[in-house]
Length: 353
Image (cartoon, rainbow, N blue to C red; front, side):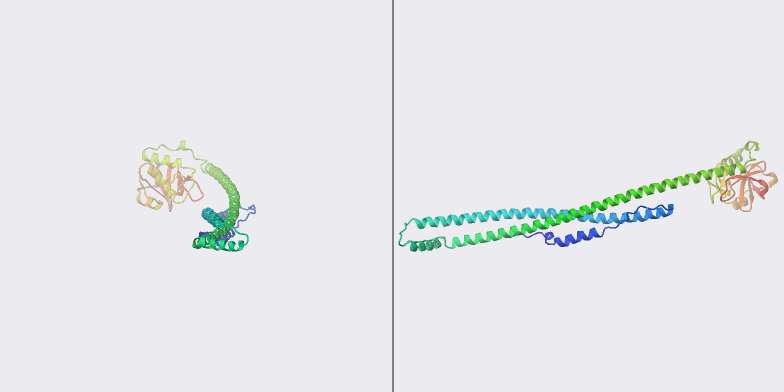
């Protein structure tokens, strides 16, 4: 009898493996996300994201096992086909040997009948005919009958093996279909949760964008109000004329008014005090040191009584650009904007160009 494939000798172990994988799938909460502050919702979204990732890994493992089982089922089907072919060959052999035995028996019977019969010695002749049949067939007929027995046994074994194989394949197919349904159900749950998560994230993003827009609009309104209040007396048209590199530096500083202060800022969106003066003179093509003390300590000094537009004015730890009419453009401190200060606050001046 053709040996069964190894995989079909251990169907219980394979079914147990598939069932174990199904039981190992991640359980995902299906309760709707409750209303909560944005940070809480983000935490919940992150937790669901982790669960989705874990479920995806488990489903991936299960899917690979299903594909492997399908390959094994294909091999089992091929084995069934081979067994069926063996059954047909055995059936043909049984039929051939049976026909041969029948022909031999008929031949012997006809030969025994050729000599005629007598009523009184019928029993004697029958016994003699049987002996003649046995002698005629001899060893060859004994071998033929033995072949017939073996062929019938082989046929029965092949039929039994094929039947067991069909039952095992059917069991595997049923288990595979059940696992496929489980996979589809888990995948559907994954998709449902993913859609909910995407919707929740979209809502959070929209809320965050709206909050940022509102904050930016409020900050812009506040900055505009502060600029108007701080520079209510500032009229650029009243500034004294200035030319050369100083004119470039003054124009640059004036253009930055209203922008926010930021630590170590050098523009273009925000500045600190020395960053503003450095970038204003860099615009004019003059390189000066980065910090306020280095600027005041290294550049040529001028008396405050002789200060001119474009000069850098100083008090300890702070600098600004003098623009004329007793006014200084500077970046004051965190939370403030670039605006006008009176020169009376300053204690010294230097001239870069």
